[in-house]
Length: 108
Image 1: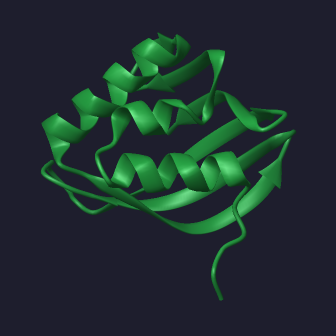
Image 2 (image 1 turned 90 degrees about the vertical axis):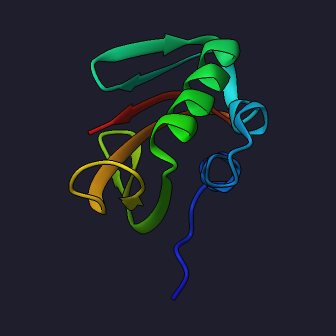
């Protein structure tokens, strides 16, 4: 059974997995933040640069395997495979939405 992801979340995964950083950033609010690898990326320009950097550095894709609602967030568990030690791994992507955009994403 396919997962039912909110539209901006599904759009983010689709674009990021296709290495389309600018397209991925369009699913975020203008002042959105992303917390990943002990860094905070703020705004769509920084988020697009982060997606491009991660894609180039790790050549990775994230395949959502589960989704749940938790404390006002949409938490997506994904299998992340790429060019890094231990690949593939399971990561949780915790999205906070604002309307039809992603306001915050934390990856752990």
